[in-house]
Amino acid sequence: MKVLLLGITGNVGSRLAPALIAHDHQVVAYVRPSSRNKIDPVLAKQLIAIHEGDATETDAIKHAILANDCSAVVNTAGLAAITPFSASLGLPQIFAAVVSATVAAHQARGKDSPPIRLWMLSGATILDNPSKPGKLVGDSVPLFPEHRGNWKLIEKTSKEDIAWSLMCPSNMVPEPTPMSPEERRGNLMAGADKPPGWRRTWLDRIPVLGGFLSVATHMGGYEIPLEGCTEWLASDLEKGLKSELIGHRVSLKVAARSS
View 1 (cartoon, helix red, strand yellow):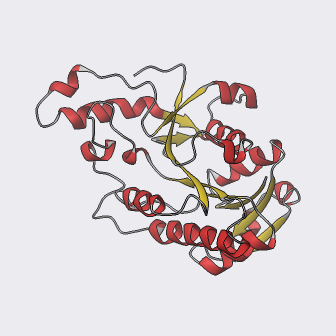
View 2 (tube, rainbow, N blue to C red; view 1 turned 180 degrees about the vertical axis):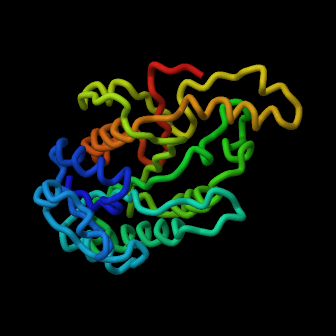
């Protein structure tokens, strides 16, 4: 697939680009002018194009999609505010611009064109809480509230325009020991809309604080390596519009761990 990647100089994007290329995807980078020189020179030579622009510029993102005939878009740019009282770091504006640009690009191609595959980076707080049916993880631990608004925004889009998925990790860290791509994929299990491998504990029965303590205890078990996440995502994109995770919030967990 031809993939437009936003956030190529960040922790996720800088690892995702090589993984995409290793899976025979063609990568177009979308980067701020001030960050272009931060792209690894070896990686830069493997990109089919580099577009400069701000991640909140809907028209510029749309142009990059159409000019390169991209069939997929992945956004790893932007950081979410931690609490409702934290200063926004601009993620809602970036998220809205990327979604709007992708929808507009599809509509410019015509209604008979296939929807554009779209992966957006989100967070674990919008996952369903297996211990509390009808509740989200973020209802017990009210952090990163911007993710909820972003999810509601993308849910309103037409399936005819975009085939979206939200990557919803807890915490991502650099890989402690280098692994092969096959080992990375095999070391992770995925869950749609809820964390995989979640087990209810006695903490769930504690009044008032039980929900918070349960989620806080579980989340440590959902820390995943950055390299594993990006390898997994690049592999999913090979499925194109046949991915079983289209329209879902996606959680990954290291398979060897238990809660």
